[in-house]
Image (cartoon, rainbow, N blue to C red; front, side):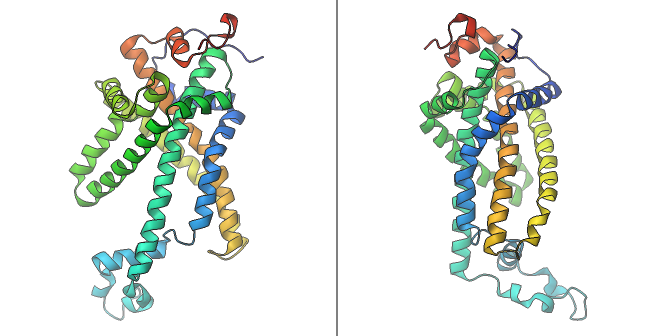
Length: 313
């Protein structure tokens, strides 16, 4: 029998949110990994199917040559790293190759953002459930997210648009990128509001903006902390995956399959962390602004504590 959570408010500092994130992650590790795998397996299959079309380092070099010209052209022929060493890059990519590469990358990014947004919705309900009952029901968590699937899809599409605008903004000028980043933080708990409170897309965005307003820097600080942790874990998992290069030459079928499996496991381990953090940020904002507590959370997730009869709607 799992220990029941205490009736405490959700107000926490950024470091307390980080600590609580890993407490929940450790307590419900197997179910959270299962939740993530259900989302990550389709992504891994898609990645394997189009991996030969996704851009490599050489592709990005070729794109740079295509759009900006090769800076090595300014080097003298005697230079150690001259244009003649990799003259094939100067040819860059054909139009068909460029279209295929960009199409594959776009499909993969859109699919990733859509599924990750849905995963966020599943895990925010799972986090709410564990606070109320001390346990997580995978099926019920997915069922609740499916209740707002169209909203989550819309928010995922919006995430893709914002992602593109942020990349363009930072590529052209710093200021436009910072403006988009500001909006990203303001809208960072929209999926949580949709699943817990039942908002539709526009209402979820407005609700998120209202919750973050006045707490933007605190919210930003939490996302930075989580981002640094995820970055570090990604490096460690990447180092552990190095032996797959011994299986086959890069680009081979075995290499692609091994890379997809390692990527699947790594994503399943990492993905729940940011989703749990997003749930805690949402609960923290409501706790600060609305004195939100477990009784209110219990009512909104539709589950009473075990002693009160369980499901209430």
